[in-house]
Length: 421
Image 1 (cartoon, rainbow, N blue to C red):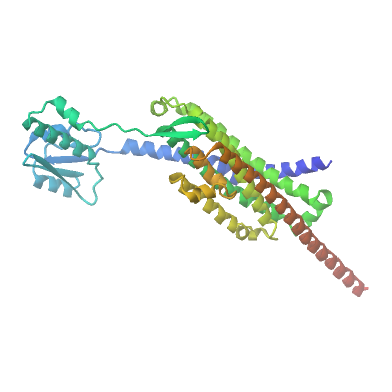
Image 2 (tube, rainbow, N blue to C red; image 1 turned 30 degrees about the horizontal axis):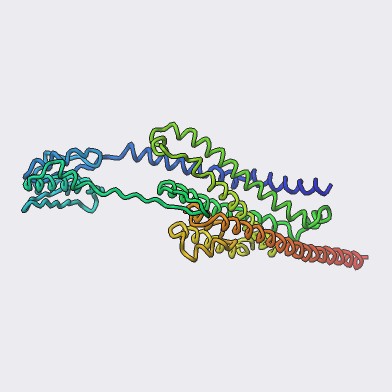
């Protein structure tokens, strides 16, 4: 019978929160944001215009060479003087104009634009003019095109990261490492958002019924322990429902997205599932422990207040702690080998944020990962015990206070009735 009452509490908490507008909006918000971003990108792409510039030079070779880059800009060949170009720029008929001069085998260019002009990337212009200058100098030196190509070909430098695990040696390519690290960033951001949202919910759930007749009725049917864990498990089920919803949406988006050419080209030669298999396995563990630690602490803080209005103030320290962990994870994203990151990755409050980045960058051994998980598990058990103890004592205090108020109210009523007689 007690088990049935426990699951009744779980189901009521779960049902109430899953049906809430806030939960539905939180689940749909990534879809709405993605749809809005895609729509804006589509509109910008359709409405974007290619900047129009003019080339001012006595050498027509420059105009012809620079005309090859049609995606970056288009050239107005009717404007050939600087005065005409400046007038057109003033009237906003041009985005800008380029003045090219040749002196002693050196080509110089001065791109002129107004404060209201769209920015034009001059990288392509620089490369084209550099190539022309190189060919001119090579011609005067009697070098062939083959010699010029050999001179300008840059050195090929690749980065390969080796991971040493005991006597084993593994190669970690730079592309693979970046994918893993950005995946860890997504995990840390998800923990941050879920923690903020569900910490507030569990604290409100715990604080909402204290000091009321509802709590007296509840505690007459179930124990404070069952009530505490029923609330906690119900909120965790709500959290897992949201995660499951995102997993389904992610699979649907992947199936739809991989049919597009640019997605297929981006994933070409990359075994995405193989790359993320180990990371996702560890990330799930850290994600669950992170949510549990902060949710249990939120329940503890929620049990310390008697009014729902005070919940925001009560969980402020927890919010600040979450911010420290999140920004510590961002610091670990850039510098996973820093001593501060290494130490922080073993502190249970910050482990869920920092350790995924160390795993993604292969800067931590498997034994260290296991140790951090064990530390988090022990810390979670301690937090649960302390939170439950505090909850039971606070609930009893508020219940006794409520009972005293009821007795006092009854005594006043009886006294008034007696005076009437």
